[in-house]
Length: 311
Image 1: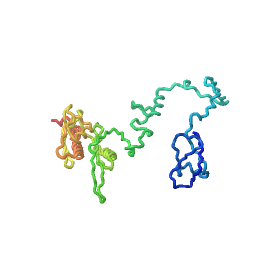
Image 2: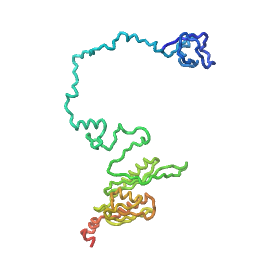
Image 3: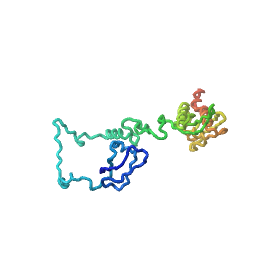
Image 4: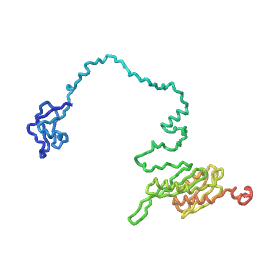
């Protein structure tokens, strides 16, 4: 950048009435740009003590660059590298190839320490492969406020219904969300839960926790069906359950089907007889299942062998 000095014949920096002042007669050739300075510009403040001379910065030309320090260098000359002498107590580090050869377990542990558990699902360091690394956790954006991780206890979750409910209070109405969730391990245990919150995610979490507190055991035969027929009602809902032969599948609809699938029942018949409310039908299914008993349990209570039940 080149520095140009401009002499003003009459310039009063104390005037604030003129909004813009122009330099018309510089002492040297300026760059062909329109230069104008406002009296309130920040770079005029250090020069306010000298009203006659103002120094401004203009664009430099390529001919103004000094390249004389390259005249004594020969680009084709070879330079010899002369490293400094190491101190007397300096011990060079061992070479990478001279160390002991790492085993596959050590390589896998080092890789897992850097990048987390392998995609195969096997952890060499004994870490939980289902828990995300704290360094990789989402810290911003939508959904980052909820930090709770999914509970890994062998139960699967299915959201049956999410409804928007309102509560009338003195100041107006309060809006909440009600979620109905069914959890089960598909091995004979199932639970129905409900929860309300101001956010859908929190409502689902609360209902899943409520369902885990109400786990029941479903009696099943070796063909993964019911031992006998049963009926159950809850509120205005009534559900009928019937055993089925192998290969039939789950013939049911609505919340009844979800409860049976999460319990692990593969052959059954179900029917909703009254209300279509999802929560009441799910709880009516639980009531009907709780009425069922295994043949061995009945024979044990009666004190007779199980073969005597069919005589």
